[in-house]
Length: 319
Image (cartoon, rainbow, N blue to C red; front, side, top):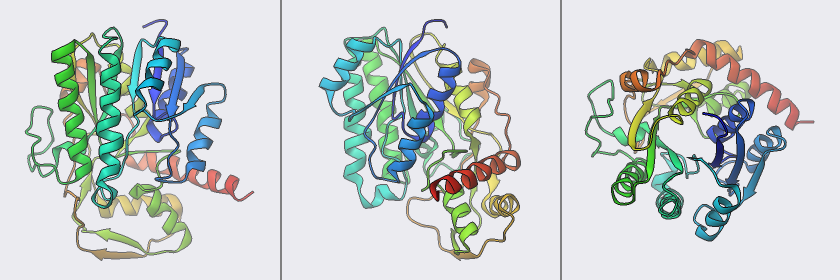
């Protein structure tokens, strides 16, 4: 689609940054908003924005309806890519209110503003966490999602219900994208692939909460390709899985990290934590059929790309 004008919420976040970088290459007009909160190092968020160079990113909160209304009036977006959220499964057990504020109230602000702009296409980040305690694999978009294992998963399921209702009531076009364990350069320090790499490099033991877990690790470039393809869908309401469709055992994942880092991990195996699920595994049949989504990067290829970035970024930080 030509002449896209794209407003990205959470542009300083991992996925928001990569979306902006790719859409800039494609020639789209871009604006971002981010509150640069301190859930993890805000210097990393500012490094992402600096790497985007001349793309404008407004520092503000998506709960501010007045600000959102003004940005839409000024920028006149054709699409909103809503990537802003309070992330993290385990942190949601400690501070659930932060998830209500960002993920529920923040998303409500987006939907309320779009009531007056049904011509704008909304794509929003959902999560594999909505599948919760579902034991049927692979996870399909038609599966029941009424047994979330974490409060984070609850807020993401609420987002889907809210978007569906606003589509029904007000004709808003909303596409929900269930991301599966996204990893890659400029990633989030709270994610296992990042924190494990950091601890292996520093010789610090890593805690493994149950050896039998499996995760459908999905490389960031594949996720970005799926989101951009979804931007060209006609209006309506849809939910799509965006995953690699190749779950990897946690201990195998650690072996791949060890190989990429060139050091052995010191491992402490403990019991699973509250909020954890045993396995994530995306069915991508619908995404393949309707989006031509075809993830290309396996973990053996993607992890070395992350580790290479990690070394360069930390060398730069130490200057």
